[in-house]
Length: 165
Length: 151
Image (tube, rainbow over all chains, first blue to last red; front, side, top):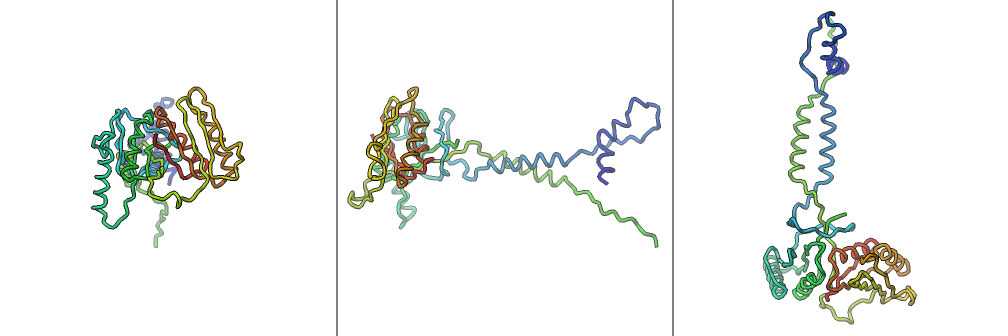
């Protein structure tokens, strides 16, 4: 069945053979213009694509918005990123959840976030987790302002955003 | 009675398979996140505990100089010989000698398996990527409790 269905009517066996130039006046064959595509190869390719895309699929989604000029540092042993308050350094400016702050007001801003958390989760202990997102070339001088502000506001768990190597 | 030849072979209709796979590919391509972002976790001491209550465990201080030199100092240990408690690593091409740092931390971990705490002391000009790289090296050697000291 397979040999009849596929091989005999395939491109080589079906159409080119009927158009042979070696025997142009030979017996007239019925021309079969309907081509059978080999769908098995197509399904193989599609399956490989689906498997590759599923392997590289990230269920965490876009937690951080990384601007074009920002390059995160690379690390081999990075943990999974979770949704926490994000403190970002972009072009020398500090942002707490996309709100621009200064070294003097960062503690106040983080304390506001802490107050909101305790209002939304009454009876729960404050986890004190925040994510720092900064370009890999940023100097520690600037990062230090954030770390000090976090310490003063009671954020003890710092998660530095990195790209996995 | 006339016997009919019964064909047992049949052809599977592959068109629905292709439709399904095409939809899957489109969905996955649209929702794919190509940049794998993770996090390097650090636990900072915020001074909420009395010094007397703090359990003393072996720790290593990693002082990073501006020129790439690194000084390691192991504390709260009896297993590491005194001569090896303070180690100086010279820079290579104005950057940290990463290979030597990794081997030094690995050898310290062999001498003191309970060495799980690493505290990094950068200077103002230390690049963020260098701090992360040091943390990565410590984590690679099985150190779990990492911290960064403020200036």
